[in-house]
Length: 390
Image (cartoon, rainbow, N blue to C red; front, side, top):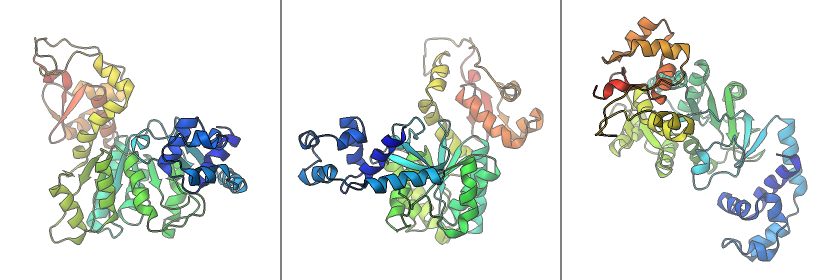
């Protein structure tokens, strides 16, 4: 987007009374933020939420130098403005009710990101840190991007685990992108842009005020297909993220803990209320995979080219072997080891010669391509073997 247009995007956000929802309604009605400023009062009044006061604020806006300074600072500090009309704007986030019209981004967003949020208590126990490291690493190995809030405790551990696994991670801030909060996360703050992104909806200089964090949490859940809560007290901010995730139609997962452990009270309560209990990364992946298929059109089209994979899909037709989609060498090796008999992941690791950290990612790709199905206990079977033979 041209520089001049971005100034209008920034300026419209500075107009008093223009919140996220009104902002998007204005842009959709008039075509661009620039067109909003050049519209007449009569045209503005065609939107129900625009009264005389708000119309006057838009027409009399005079803080153009502030918008210019904001844009100049993004250029100086290597920060990108990604508007909701940009192809890089996360499509999952655009689905929520009050999505940010644009994001400040340090690092890079990717259209290939498949996001799972991992969040929890700032006062993480040793057990919580261990579980977070294990889950986030395995999710990263499987090709998922780890989303969290760069807070102390579980959040920091989730980001670090994704980086250690050479995966991608996205940190969502509750302050301006120029502020490091908490300050002890400076090294993490400096590292994340090279393997993901730091994002915020707040302008430069916005301090980490308390009310910003519940708003930040809606972005964490909004970016993601599912939210994993590792540890949470009874009044934890992570429970807000879980509630927002449910409102947004996202999956909610919780790691159980001891009944006498303060940090497990929130997660145990979530499980009682219907959150999916997590004992291993496969519990997350098997719930998320159907959503991935719905959200990746090419994979969905690819899978629909094949005959139905069960009698339930088409009870009157017999099974016909289908042509396999294009596979990588690693996928071919794994597929050759999976047959009508369930094969556990340890056997695949031992017989394939492929590093353990790559196995989960390859298996996920085979699942997405409709070639294998995961059974309980991390066992895998060829999907065609689920159909009766002719």
